[in-house]
Image 1 (cartoon, helix red, strand yellow):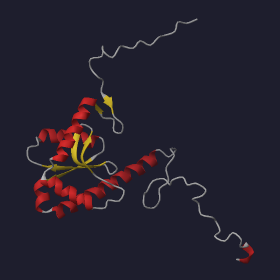
Image 2 (cartoon, rainbow, N blue to C red):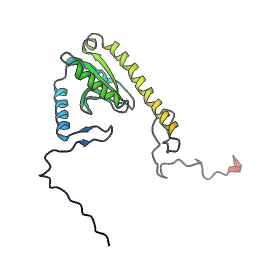
Image 3 (tube, rainbow, N blue to C red):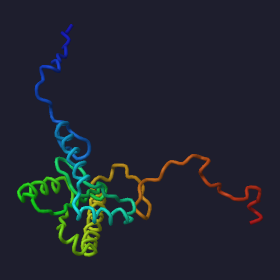
Image 4 (cartoon, one colour):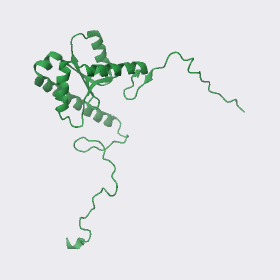
Length: 197
């Protein structure tokens, strides 16, 4: 008979450094402490938003984006972006004074590495001519949606054996399961004879 192996676990007090937490979604590895600090900072930024951010947020709140939406001061990975649309794959950053260019470049590269399209908008342009900024953002949104659809088509072409959800003409997701009570009857007049038709 073979010897059984036992699992030896260390007590929690011996582990001085906490391992990195792998978050759902994009595979970011962020510690709980760092993630809590980022969320706290995002809440503070939302409370003390700049006039340019408030003006753009007001326009976004009145706009109808359909099934797409934007989150203000969203934590994406280890960065905080001014506006983020997860299902569109688009992050909007308002360029204010005092942001170090090296940090901004590193943040943009990390976001683009995981497939997030980054758009920079100067704060002065928002305050001077917000309609021109919205026209530019509309083009970027359309391009981001087109990129997502093309990536989905490529994935489906490369993996034909995977089960594909059915989409309707508008691109909405798979149909919901309906109960037999929700289904329409085949004939609105069940007493009618088919020969009489």
